[in-house]
Length: 126
Image 1 (cartoon, rainbow, N blue to C red):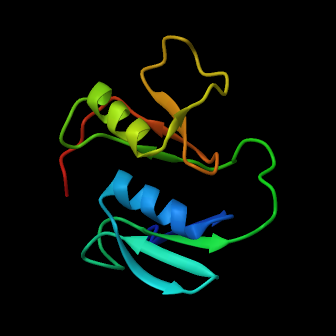
Image 2 (cartoon, one colour):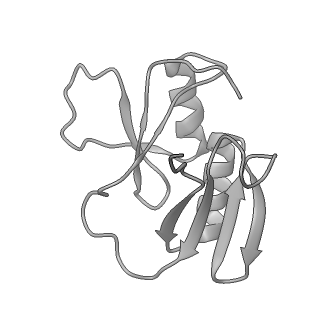
C-alpha cells in the first residue's frame, strides 16, 4: 500500500485571511482551529476524503523567495478564463516567475504572496 497526501501545511502571517481566500478558491470550509495558532480548512466531508485538508499555521517569519512546493488548481465548472477572473476577484494576483509567455497556465499568488498555478484542463467536480 502507498501513502496518500492527507494534509498540506502552509505557514502564514494571517491564517484568517488565507483561510477565507482558500475556502473561496477551493469551496472548502473551516474544520478546526486553535485561536492564534492554526486554522484547518478542507472539503465538506472533512478529513480523510479524496482531497487533502490545509493547515494554515501562524508564522511571523518573512517569506524568502519562491516556494519550493506550490499548489496547482484546475477549474471544475467554468473555463480557465472565467476561473481566472473569479480568483482575481477573490484576492489572487497574477505574478511572473519566469514562466513562458505562451504558457497554458497562469501563475498567481494568494494574499500573502504564495504562488499557485491555475491550469487549463477542466476537471470534474468531486
